[in-house]
Image (tube, rainbow, N blue to C red; front, side, top):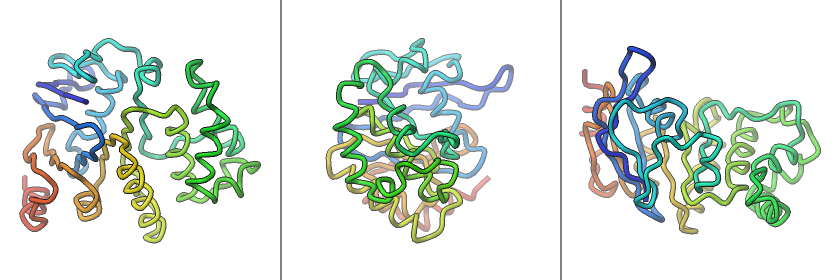
Length: 233
């Protein structure tokens, strides 16, 4: 479904990604893990068109995504849940969700998807009239995830969803990701919690200093070996 081949990208004269290649298969959860500075978020930004690639290709269902403006990615069937939630704090929970279905192609189904979001995230229904800025960190992450799902994306990209959350909220979040996977959603998950990521994934990529240093089916991953690579320099 998603193919990244020989991708190089960075910021101005500073290159961060070095010939990165990976793939996310339909209906599977692909985990990308690695320490801070490995290039994980830069990779997602390059996929989403937020930064230009200097070489390589990104394809979705065989069609190149290179040059697609970020604001057209929703129409292409891609939604990204960025690190740090980035909700609209001065809007209500429900208004945040409706924004997720703003593209014209999705507006006709906004009410139906809103109800589906409330069914998946009952806490959001309880708080639908509250300002999003009043939510806890875990609730804000649920809102960001639900907002991404409002466009019914073919590919859901989630960046560091457990960052800064209490353990109970991390468990709830990964339960939801597991449910989405069972429903056949294609997910690319960037996550530093290696144990959680490997447990839920179908395939695991480990990045170090802008390169993929491990590509392995999740059920074949040895956590001790993975951690040795993770912390190596």
